[in-house]
Image 1 (cartoon, one colour):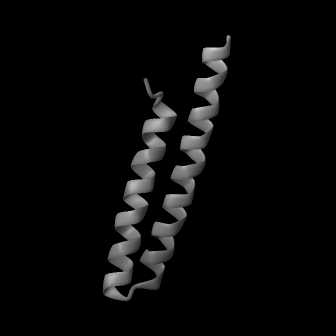
Image 2: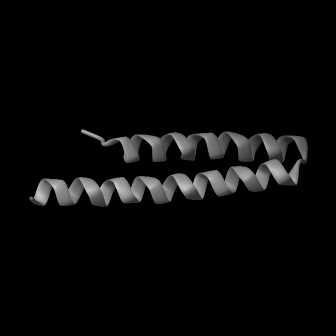
Length: 59
């Protein structure tokens, strides 16, 4: 089962992908950059959730 950080991280990754694609389609570099940043933040949050999950399972 996924914890809240894993779910939120995946949601941020999806949001970032959509935002990046929208920025690319419209030629808006700012939106595209924000999408990339959201995607990276989502990956980091999911990784944190993965570690948190592994630690709780190990205990």
